[in-house]
Amino acid sequence: MAKDLYEILGVPKTATDDEIKKAYRKLAIKLHPDRFATASDEEKKKAEAQFKEINHAYEVLSDKNKRANYDQYGSEEGPQGFGGFGGGGFDGSGGGFGGFEDILSSFFGGSFGRKNPNAPKQGEDIHIKINLTFEEAYNGASKTVKLNRDETCTTCGGSGAKDASSIKVCPYCKGTGTVRKVQQSLFGQQVVQTVCSNCGGSGKIVGDKCAMCRGNGYMRKEASIKVNIPAGVDNGVTMTIRNEGNCGRNGGGKGNLVIAIGVTASDKFRRVGNDLYMDLPIGYYDAACGNTITINTMKGEAKCKIPESTQSGTKIRLKGYGMKVLQKESYGDLYVIIKVETPKGLNAKQLKLLKDFEDSLQANQYPQVKKARG
Image (cartoon, rainbow, N blue to C red; front, side, top):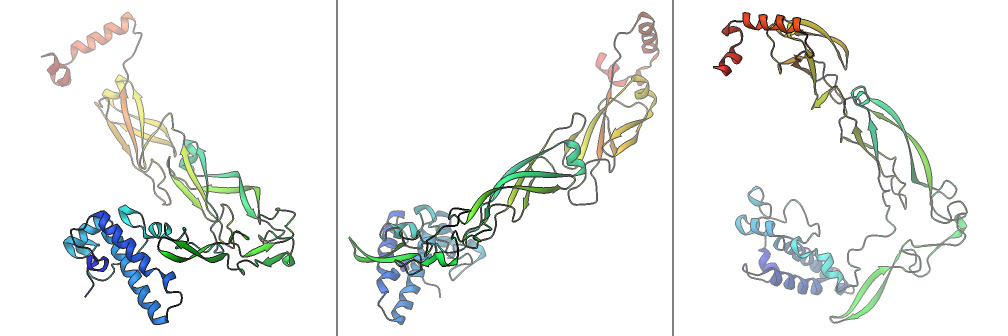
């Protein structure tokens, strides 16, 4: 049966946030691995297990939502999971109080949980923006972009040294990149592990530096990268090209090139998802009698059939004449919005013909107009 988290920290279920925090700090100091440096293997394992228990208990009880789930369901995961240490594992987040690493660092000089300075470090991503015309977004485009990025020095291979003989093991930390020292605090003597100040954590001392990169191991260079943008991209879409970012450190991989796509609006088409909309002005005759009109679409010319008695605002669908669906061999639809245009600058003869035509109409031929006029 899983241990009660409140019992692990030695606090009641009614404990306040501050009481939980104080109890955890007290136990964390008592069970910290540095206190068991000279203990037997059995004692070390026991202390390590207890240390993990209090870390987990604090992670749950210091988080408002997790604590509420635990109090109600017996598990920080809520009604979906019970028992054990849960599926997520301890991440050192520490909820609303700040992580246990932050608390312990106040006692151990910030050394607890320090990452290995010699570990491979992933290169940073590079973010750029590429602007496309509406037509380029529809058809796809190939762009060549130029950017400055860090690249591993080809002369020294990233070591920063003139040659292999110029690299020596740091005599201060013996190549570990860290040093341990005894520090006096309010809680007695504590063993503190810090980054070696002599080598900066690299564990190595470079005598003669590489003349090309001046000992950095990398250089800033301009690169030209061809970017193939697929048809159908929309404004705001993000593309990622892997391994085209800055170089890593200590043998770490390259970062990525992250591209934000911008698309210039069309003066003719409006995009909604993969569908396109366009306005089509027509005259009175075509609206009344109907007609088939040739229109220009993104795919080229297409026939748009106007039915008889078409009203302004009527929407006509042309299937498959919309935007290319991204990464698929299909298209959205084109919706043609009819706009019946009223003629301007009529002469006297035209006005009389129009008046005679208007007078000849029956009520059922102008239902909305007759209804509005009573």
